[in-house]
Length: 117
Image (cartoon, rainbow, N blue to C red; front, side):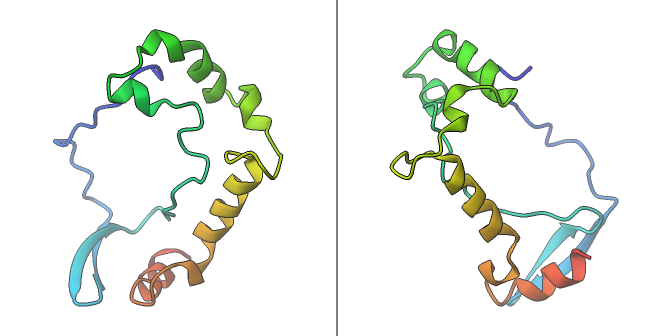
């Protein structure tokens, strides 16, 4: 269901595709089969859904908005004005920055080159 916080099962053994990689002087286990990107969406929380998770807003107030947003049908998801902080263009900018190798620290780039082909 998409109307409540997802709780991950930390006991699930997702280890079969992990490889050890070194970033700077530290070693990490990273999935080798699926590429990843990491970015903070510039329009994250535009529906103020964080208020549900911190308890200051009941889920009932968000149910319809979340339902529409999860189907990409919320009207605010179509905002394109420069002066709208959650405008779709800012999401596109965040995505393009996330997929650019130059957006990552120099120590991470060799790892990304090795894992993402």
